[in-house]
Length: 156
Image 1 (tube, rainbow, N blue to C red):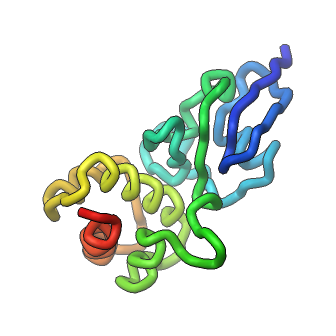
Image 2: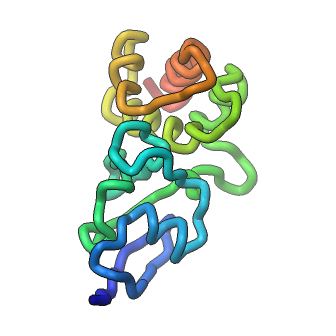
């Protein structure tokens, strides 16, 4: 059975016809072509699919597209403006907080959510806040340093 989902994605009104079982991550990637949001596990374990929905970081692999009806969704593609990286993206680059890059979009979106909720996190709070995001390449040290640095730039 098909349903129509109306939402705002990266500031643009979207109306898409999808099957009722379609996940938000599938709507974002397959229907809208925004492939910066990655699928890593389909079970909320890795965090690669993290987006912001109504201002909160959510794992889009476990949200039905229908649940996003009327929502405002922002993906990694929404962060850079006029060629300028978001402070979190810039900090990840500056602190070499990525290797293969697969986890990076979800990690950045989770980190922004973390800093929005706690503008001046401690290292321990950052590490705790990242528990739902896996990186198989790094030891997390540079990721934590990037988030701490960005939190200062973002007003913390």
